[in-house]
Image 1: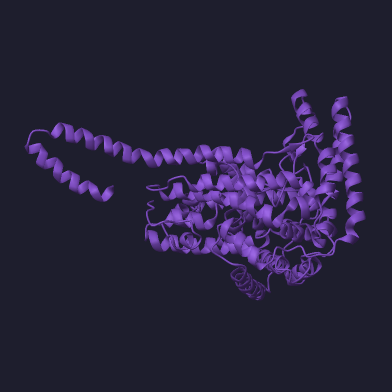
Image 2: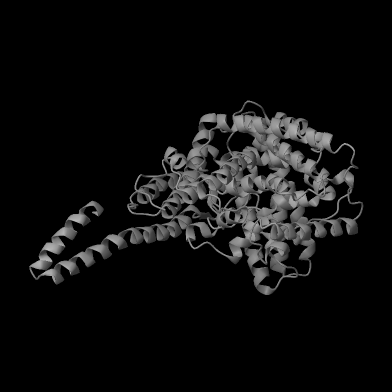
Length: 563
């Protein structure tokens, strides 16, 4: 159509001399409107389809709980093929890159369900999948790892509850007993490490329900009974898991071939398992070397002092937040929004005695600003609420942790970016904490890759994380270790994403400056990055730079795209 326009234009001028130009001009105008409208109509079709798809993805109930029985999952797998065919049938000719990215985000979500149905099967393999009670908000767009479709977000409730909240919570809690009864029939796979780590994960729900019983002691009879029934079902389910533990002897990782398919088709990552191993090995060596050089450089300086009580911790944490926000504003790192400082102040945590401090609490009690750099997460979440993306497809959290390279990758990249930007120039020993954090993330990510490949088991992965985290900061006894490696075994690609996402963000940062020229600034990069939403870094790169190489390699780009 586009190549035919010049010929039609010549015809128009010749007919004009014959006195019939009005008809030809009108016809050309109609054709132009039709040609311009079709791509927008097809994109509107995608947006409407996306809403339908989300309804299908979360559909299916049984006795008031989500339905993950074998028959339900077989039916969903058969229906998924039809949904994928409908998506493929949408005509993308003439679409902008942004619109094509949206199409691929929907495609990735469908591939995520496909992967779960074929490979991950959390409803069959993973006892932690059936956890319902969540007492704390995740710092990422959605829950980390597989979660069933009816989670109880207890952190969203404010106590004492009003009548509407009581009714809502009662209804949610009533889904717990039938779901756990169903789970006993669904959990048929032989994945030893997932089973073992899953049992430990259930302690959180059991304790959460005990605390909830105290909070609701004067609530309605219906709510108190729902809490009691959920607690009884939870304790019984934990006992059942324990009784089945000795029968579980098989591997839990998805294997390299499946892992590579997942990276390409769900996470929309240009990397492979082998490539991720190489990146994490290199990063682990690099940051260990950087740490030792920093320590040598600062050897004459006193060690960082840790907060010794709650008041000291609070004062130190709040002062660090204010200093960090001031630095971002004064050094023109990004456009500081009104919600940024309150978002961090709400998440400063609490004082913990030294013997109870896990890895991140050690950092928080010594140099809290190092963690605030990673807590770009809370800026992201506040931005999603205050300035929602114009595309409905990017407005909320993508399913299946598809956001992980951007969310975790940039949060990790920002730590070192702020180090190089000078945030710790007046507190040089805090620079050492940044390198320790980077090393811990590289160590745990590398271990998770070997575990997903079934080259080591969960115990060996945990031991590797402890051994390769510098200065004894990773306790082998505190719950954080089991939580992290358990999560990374449950969710392929998550443990490595901090470093592999950082790798992609570092690359994008450099490429953006090369492409935009001398007038480009750090603030322009940060502000522009925030406009794309929490989507895979490869998709951001495609839209930001028009670079199609990675997207084409994943089957995402076509030669007719335009920015």
